[in-house]
Length: 269
Image (cartoon, rainbow, N blue to C red; front, side):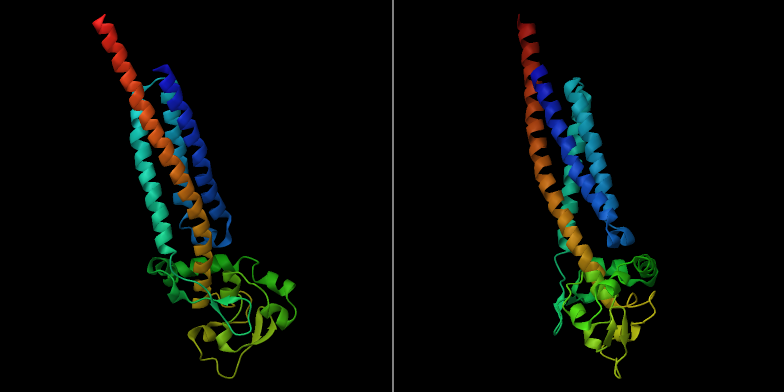
């Protein structure tokens, strides 16, 4: 029984370690500009990671100090958390399966269309109430101002590999036909009716294309890239937790079997 309990405790120590990548993924998301402005995924990931850590600690204590009710609580709670983690990983995959950038003529960077992305993600940015808060957060960063320091010539800018946020928010869409002066200042064409985004562009440095659908599309493209990376971490950790949980269940069952056998022998003798 003692050996089995020690094995259960060691297994739960591994589960404690597996919670660290989940918490780390949530903290990483929270430090990214777009996720810190949108505030959708990072807290569920961090909270789930902390809960897994707490439950694993309970299993660790129950294993080494032989507290059966704590081990049973661990087995039930960890199963629930594994299911929640699996649901979260599948959800992230489903909402990020759609959407990608589109090439523009004579441009190295891509253009982004809001309608390419999943309906759930679009609803996070469509309402003016939600977008006003996100837009104010994005416009307070230096991501667009940094382009002016990096690219002086038009061709250098056109050959730049901008990230989705910079492409969608810091410049007008290529289809509008604006003339480059610097990355955040463009001369309006005679006919700017190619799309509503063309009318939304402003050379005012606090406005730019933050009101454009292309900016919303660029934001979702950035979220998709970062959420997919976080999802890979969650899936790998999920596989590890399932393996640890199954081994723990077997060890707990063996411990109970040994305990029953020992009591049987004592009663028989």
